[in-house]
Structure formats: C-alpha cells, structure tokens
Amino acid sequence: MALESLPVLDFSRLSAGPQEAEGFRNDLRDAMHEVGFLYLTGHGVPQELTDAVLDLSRRFFELPEEQKLALENTNSPQFRGYTRMGGELTAGEVDWREQIDVGVDRPAVERGPGIPDYWRLEGPNLWPETLPEMRPVVTEWMDRLSVISLELLRALALSLGAPEDSFDAAFAERAFPVLKIVRYPGESDPDPKQGVGQHRDGGVITLLLVEPGKGGLQVEHDGDWIDAPQVPGAFVVNIGEMLELATNGYLKATLHRVISPLRGTDRISVPFFYNPALDATMPQLAENPEFQEKARGLSVDPTNSPILQTYGDNALRYRMRAHPNVVAAQHADLLN
Ligand SMILES: O=C(O)CCC(=O)C(=O)O
Ligand SMILES: [Fe+2]
Image (cartoon, rainbow, N blue to C red; front, side, top):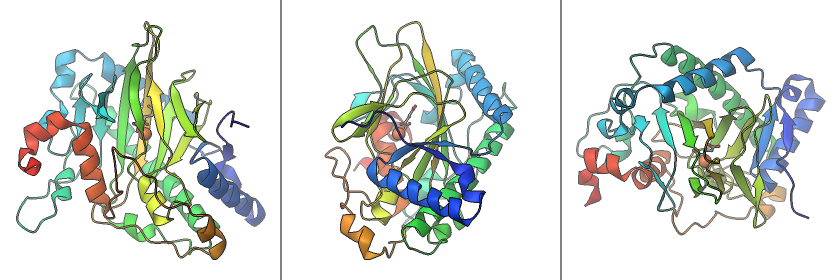
C-alpha cells in the first residue's frame, strides 16, 4: 500500500529517559531507512523565533527589486546572496523560485596552486542593509538548528550500533551549514510548474521550515510522489547524500521536489542544510551486520553521480550545476 504521509517523530522523547530515548532513536533510524523523510515535532525551537524568521523572510522578498539585486549571487564567489527568479536550475530545468543563501560568515580563502577549489565556497555573506534584524535572527536560527541536527546525527549513529560521536569530528571545526530563504511565486495555472525540480540534497541532514498552510513539497517513495504539506510546529527533516554515503545507502537520500503554487498565491520555505567542513569526509560507520545486510548501496542519478567523498567536492559540483550564471561571473576558470 502506498505511504499516505511522512512519519511524525517527537524529538522531546530523546530527553524523556533512557527507554523513550532508545525508542526515538530506533524510530528515527527506521524512518530514515524506509522513507528518508519525516516530520519532527517537540524540537523546542520557540514559536516566536520561527515567526520572526518567517516575518523577515516575507519582508526580504517585499524589498524593491534593486535592493535584492544589490545582493545578487553573481557578485559572490561563495554563491551567497540573492538568486533572481529563473537564476537556478535543477535537473537541467529552470526552478521558479527566488531565494537568498546564507552560510557561516568567514573570510574568503585565497586561491592558489595546491588549494582545493572547494575552499572558494568559504567566505562572507551578503546581507540586506535595509533589514538589519535579519542577520541576528538568521544567525540564531542557524545556531539552534545546528544543535538539533547534531543531536539527530548522534541518535542515528547510536541507533546503528556506532559510537555516539561518530559524526562529531566532521562538524567540530569549520562546519559549513547553509540556509536558504526561498519564495515560490504562483506559477501553476492550473498545470503544475517546477518550483524546484526533483533532487536529493547534497549535504548530511536538512531541516525545513514551511509557511503555515502551504503544500507543494512532494517526496518520492516506492515510485509514488507523497505530498508533504506543512504540519504546524514541525520541521520536515531529510537525509542528504553524505549520510547515504556514510551508511552505504542504509539511510536514504530521497528524491523530492516542489510544485509551484497556484497563480495568485505564493509559498515561502526555509531549508537549513547541516553540512560538515568542506574538507571533511564522512566516517564509514562500522555498522553491525544486521544493518549492513540491508544497506542498498548508493542512489544512482544520471544527472548527479557519483556522490563525491569529500564534502566540498560534492558541494561545489552541486553549486556549479545549479547556478551557471555565478560560475560564468566568478569561476569561469573552472570550466576548462
Ligand atoms: O522549499 C522546499 O520545500 C524544499 C526546497 C528544497 O528541497 C531544497 O531547496 O533543497
Ligand atoms: Fe531539497
């Protein structure tokens, strides 16, 4: 029978005593093995902070076009800042969405012989001058979601019979989380249009916030597309390719896509991608044989394979494929 909706998990079970915690870990592992996506409730992020993030997101997109274009990502070798409508491709097709990309504010790394190209992704953010509140609110949001993400990774490691801190080292220094604030304008009329084309996330684990009442996200399961509408108070959580790699496919990076909203409406979402340092490789979890037998190997995607071992190589390839205009402006030398 087709799955009707994503599993729902209550994060607060993790701190409700050893038995509840173990139950949570096993349910988390099973959901991420079978579906690769779930709704996470009980995560403890205050509603006021969530509301502030969504409010700022709306205000950002309402800024005059020239203020958004002043932050255009073609000005940023790090692919930060504003992506104009039509400025992004997934599976070779245009995505009908505009967005701002934020990472960790760090100085840019100098280019030079022997320095891996992926260090080009590290550097400063571009913030809108007329929304000074955006920086502290988004920074707090990213800090809080980083903590939850690492807790989830620790729970997954334990649930697979590996040491709890298996993933810690990859994130300990120079973790590379990315937040996107995205707006999908109403393009479907009534036939569906590509909000974002089908893809697997390229990082480790993703926590997604969606505006109340909005649908459009669809998740592949056993050949069907499952609708994943917003659930009040929940994040949508999914596995990225790096975690699939670390578990030889036992945990699944699942295909998903967003259908454009109907004309006259729009949809804002805020995906947070928890990623390790650019030079990190994922630990290969010494899983117990029970899980190893059921590992499926890695997903094969003709538009995106193989998954590269070093996170930065995977991330740079992903960025270059999605944003050819940034490549033309900033990285033309990498095209040879
Ligand atoms: O907007 C969404 O709901 C999901 C976006 C997404 O899958 C992505 O940006 O990777
Ligand atoms: Fe995604």
